[in-house]
Image (tube, rainbow, N blue to C red; front, side, top):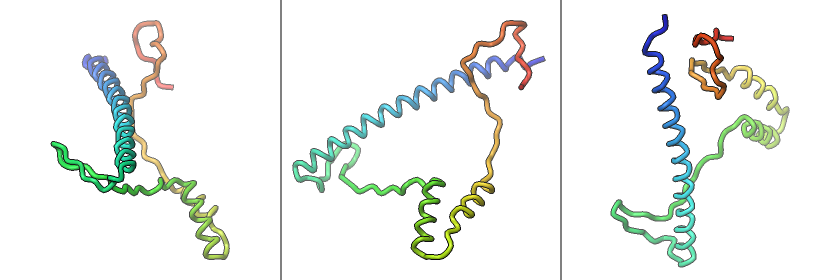
Amino acid sequence: MADPGIGTYVRYWLHYGNLASSFFKQYGSARKVRDDYEKQVIQSLQTNGMEKAIIQTHQGTIRVAEKREPNPLTLAKIEELLHAYYRQRGGKDETVDILSFIRANRGYTTAKTLRQSATPPPAGNGRALPPT
């Protein structure tokens, strides 16, 4: 006999999944608008020769700053950097061997999760189908 609370848990899971999705979309939209305004403020300050200005607000101060972010370190980027390293150093290029080793020994973590699909449930007695 299935737990009678499972229906409630599933409804809550669906509700909070939809809520999280909605918040994520709103966050993305708000972030894009904020970034657009940031570009406009910086451009306006640069146009008026006020790039070093400090703007006072009720929440503190705002100033133009340099933001430095490293490029993503993907396997393709690592391969590119290793090829450059071996070209600069000279000698045998071991990039392919190193990347083969990394890919073979990378490892994964596995966890149980619920996955929703848009297909309707099968007609019948209301029981779930056995796992495939």
